[in-house]
Length: 330
Image 1: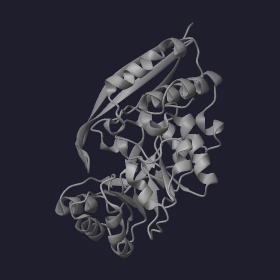
Image 2: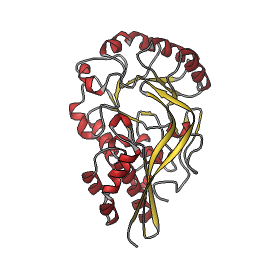
Image 3: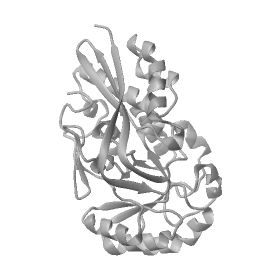
């Protein structure tokens, strides 16, 4: 039987609003791809992100533009050359991974030399941007988690960080301004972040201003998120960054994410695996990168009121893998 491509939008309401410096959301809007061939179905998911000029409609249009190539049998390498990095390619690439593994009777763990069975991993649990009092309340509810990710902006981030640290004194902590700081603020907050034992500062500057990090020696490791999408971006990455946050919706799928992880390691950079607010269908392929990462931030599905059946499960910051057969082969 010939290949058949299905692509459609899905909406997953959140159990509570998710707020960052750029705004808030109450639902995950995703693009789902299914590729069937000879009775076998591969699935993938992408999360279009307005920050990168994407929408659900535009992502679907990009995929539809490659329908004929996909249905005539284009492989992942052809898709890499034919589609730009982003959420649309992510959905197609991951669907092809799933299809290939199922057709071959194998699984992603064996293909990528991952632990079998997959072990639970520590994921950052996000404290969304809010008032200091509300963020302290949210952090207190997550205080048993080993790692927290704290969303801040330019409006008194010191008070927000102090409030979260007081409520969760033992957790490791990532601070994420989502491109809202200046280099002066990064400098001025260094001592406070040392005192609060912050482990990682994620993308504090706008990506188009990150040249300010050239030659900057931060006491807190700084992770590049919006500043790095694919491996080729590393050539222009300022030396002030020490970690790269890999998201499959930026790289355009697992294939490119693995390339970026390998290239980052070769340059002596730490690796973080992140995600958008998504379902477990986005997290399952990201797990292949996260299993060998220094920091993991894959709590996206934990914000959903209801996830896909058989997906990941979380408890106190420990993320358990999807059920066997959910994605990536047998």
